[in-house]
Image (tube, rainbow over all chains, first blue to last red; front, side, top):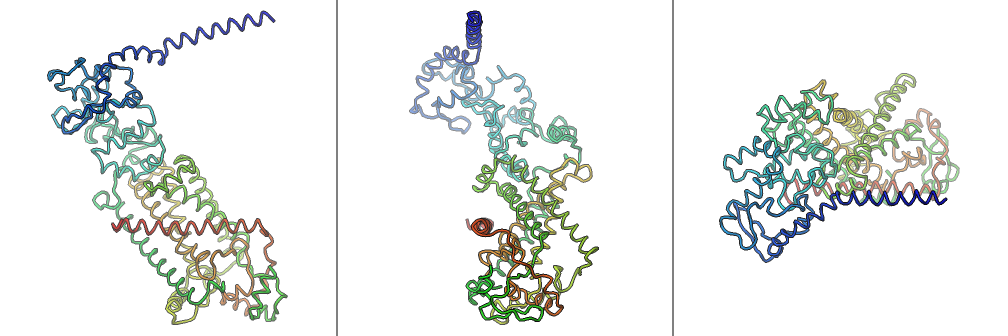
Length: 293
Length: 304
């Protein structure tokens, strides 16, 4: 019996040691370390936590200088220093030399320090080329991923945010996507159904005319086959972005749409008139009371 | 049941039964309008159609508040897609049964395919429509219907055609990879437009304008016609509803073939609960669809 208790005792000691080891090297423990680094963040937040700090306008976008700490703590970057992205900033009043180009730095340039592969893929994409050409509406990393509230991209919450982010610039395409089964199921809460990036790619987005694109003639079948095993080129010729109400979008789809609009209108109008007259005459003849016909 | 008969018969009307005059209080037999096959087919149609509508329509009107609510209620689009496919299989089942019945009717029973008493539309239906509109305007009597009225024929054939159309397009979308082994991808685009438009048409026909109108809402039937569940109804009631068939059977001497004991299946409190549940669901469906239709129409023409 005492022998059994000895095993139990050693077991408890081993378990506690394991637990302690796990704790030291675990993300929770790293968070503790992070908060030590955060002493530097604390000095930033000394000013930037105040709602009274006001706003600054860059590239026509008005940004608040106040940090929402709840958002920040929930982001995947919450363990980083402010200066990881706001490179070169020092405590105290920021000088003009420091703040020069901070927006582009924090929204784009700084990201490549850690996310080099994604930055390279982005540079080759249509969005990257637009940005390089100096287009002020071109998206930067932060345009899609956000800034202080950056989410883990493998979460359902991030997946749900993809359509609204693309919609900011590609509203028409978002609408036609929503008319497909993918879009319908997505809106109603199916997180597995295809969203924009599943077909178009994320950092490597290119127009269909570019052979390297995920939706080019060379690659589109493989892109469909990621989910639809056995898909062929006929399958891939399915048009995702079709507006049935426009003959310019697809004449055949429009033909069936307008035919049904007319059929439904005729049937419902006739049905409505017929029912109404029946109710009217039936009431007058007292049929409701008699219970006949 | 008997007391109801007595009441109806005591309204002063004699019932002619193969030439015999039946006096009030002696008749308990009822007119058998639908056999067990008809009733089971209606049951499968009713259940599968309702499931298909509640799992499919939220997709079509995805931005509607009710769409999100009803999807959440049934467990999201993934459960909806499973339920929708199960109900589709029930639809296939009853459709195949109907085809089998048709084969039996033609080959074994050698029943007539058109003419009086059949469900095939004919010249009399056109006359009935015109007569009905004269009656609406107070310029003629209520038409004398045969076994099926023109709206019942429309109800049946629109459902039959709709099942083929919506079934074909539905299976195309269920098996898109297999479909595009034979057809170009644009057929899937067209399939969705047809499937969803046909669904709206079917819901309009069933939930409001034709079926629920005929079986629940119309004067004389409100709140519910139970004959498709019970199979039979009082003879004098039927004689007044469908005088042509009744008179033909009297003339042929075949009335006794369709006289049966009243259905003993659902009685008392349980039956009441079932009838009222069906009635309330149906009336709610008709009401909700009516409101929805007005709302969508107003939105479409830009009023709201």
